[in-house]
Length: 139
Image (cartoon, rainbow, N blue to C red; front, side, top):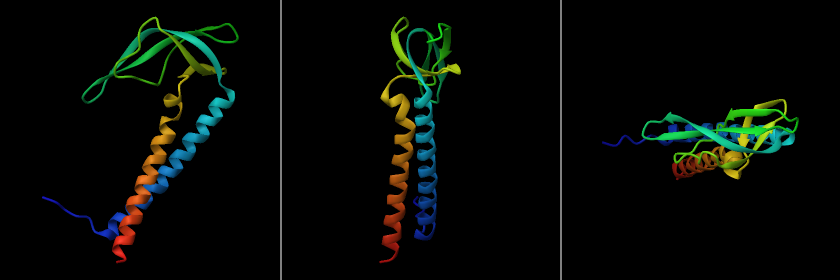
């Protein structure tokens, strides 16, 4: 059974979601730029994997050991996961904040920009649906 939403509800909901998605994209972009402005590069080795059970699958976060520019050895868990995992012993490039080296990111395009791209896509889709509903309601 379908329950169509009235245009009067679709427009403000979609436009609100669109505005919130734009704010999210801008904040994610600024956060990433700030991180990249201070981050240092290093090469690490995947030591192990931390499994996290999702609703229908398991994702694996690599635990990576690397040496900072200051010579300290750090072992930290990446916040980037894969469903297929990472090969233990694999060499991997990372970016880290020198003041908090345990806050690392895998040095790859998608791990750095996926949030910004996702939020921007959500904004475009939401604004598009809202605009289409608005134009459709006007005749």
